[in-house]
Image (cartoon, rainbow over the protein chains, first blue to last red):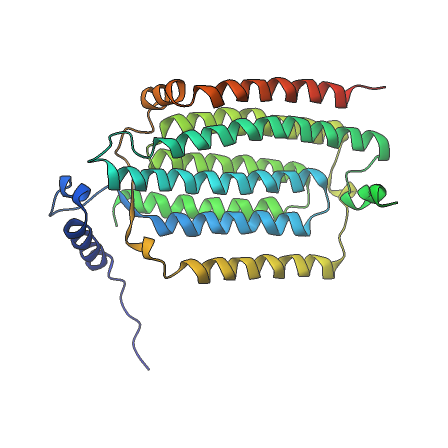
Length: 148
Length: 166
């Protein structure tokens, strides 16, 4: 049986840094040696966003309260927002030498997603209030009247 | 590990935990409060990525406006644990299995991608500051900005029309 491998944080970081430094022009503005303090591999953000998105999907599938389903949709929107911001920072770092404002589009898209989400919530909650007024429940299973 | 990474892991664990609590809580008011906490954690991630404008907009718009709207509607309807609709246990299990399968597919598809070699810049970089974002917003993105104001107006009218008692 193999002994558990120790976590090689520092070594992995050094490999990554050297590879980035050798292969991409934009990274040459960063110091060769020493710690690159503010760098985070983007796949951590990808997996965090995936986890949040899947929790939102599971909530939509498992809950029957219309308001909670709506909140899970908000959670999914936020997962996408987080990923967009992480990708915009990644794009900025890789292209900052050519274009100083590279990656600014991603953050503006997040802003527009928030704008649309605010409008969506106001209309959606009005619909839910209307539905509660008519059938005195927020259970989505009672909403199948359109079928008949 | 640098302090940024430690903060990232703490925030990531808190985000996932509170997002799970949103789904798991039986009381809708608790769900809303956990969702507010999730949004604060995501705002913390924005701060770590130095997206300061999005941080403050996330706090004001999501945690401040949208969640108050949710809380207001829940308290208006007087929802609590006893009025919570119960779903069939098998249906719930099927939902969890479907979500788990989606997670499995995502992770399997993305675990070996080439982008693993890419890094996101935290703590530094000034594209997230309000000056740069504002200049881009009012130069290249001025038409979508104006269209979003029309969207808000129509949403407002729609809300009033839907909510009006006939």
